[in-house]
Image (cartoon, rainbow, N blue to C red; front, side):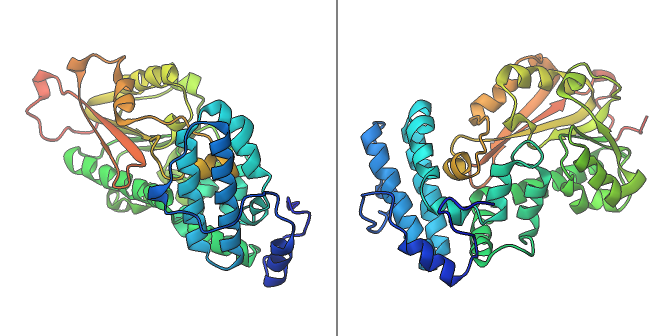
Length: 362
């Protein structure tokens, strides 16, 4: 891939020195980046330009000096502060182009996690290969040394840790459902590689009923099939098909970990209602959404060209508005980092079977 500095990416000291000697694109001095808690950015173009120029120059120098963790952390925190302090218009027309025009992009795009999102080989950012990068923490073998060092930072920041926790959390809920319901039927929507099922003891011990994985990306379904064979039923489904409940039975646990990050509120409301309609009495529906306060937002929207539809906890809760309150009990919560909000809906069991502690599988 072409480097924005016009130099081939070698990832070695010689290449780094060549980058460092290149004339700086910005006039702002590269003094130490201020402590993030002390940064205040007013929502005005001049302030934003000065702040982002200072941030980029400082982070660039730190990478070239080998201070990868400090550089990437400062960059992510600074971009978040700037992003939250300016309008969408200012961000898109001034701040983001400024950031993408800086030579630091040539270093950051040596990180396979960052560049895969930016290039979108499957047509979208955040594909299942990227999630595997986070889960495994191992870059491709041909990654440059600079790319490896940056990769270790970008996949282990708090957003990455939230994704790892999400996988573990879903596996625990699957196991909990299997304790409360005999051989529950499980449905994963927009399943990716469905790595959470690998952590489920109920799945490993054969304590689940049917397990169904739905996704619109055939590559994802092929990976699941190669790992799990007939143990997991895979099917390609569009959102339109989900809204119409086409060819779907009912399930004890339905979840979608990332789909709501990409669909607008009106569609998310309809989808929540449709998924709830195929939930068995006593079953659970779970959906997750990244929050506006997630600590990777500025970096993702800039150097990864990865924009999510973000929701606060209260906004995520409101996606149940198409369902009568008498039909479910809900709870919502965020992870320890405040990056992801979860909403769980438990369908109320009809009176005639309410005293049953375990329901026989139909």
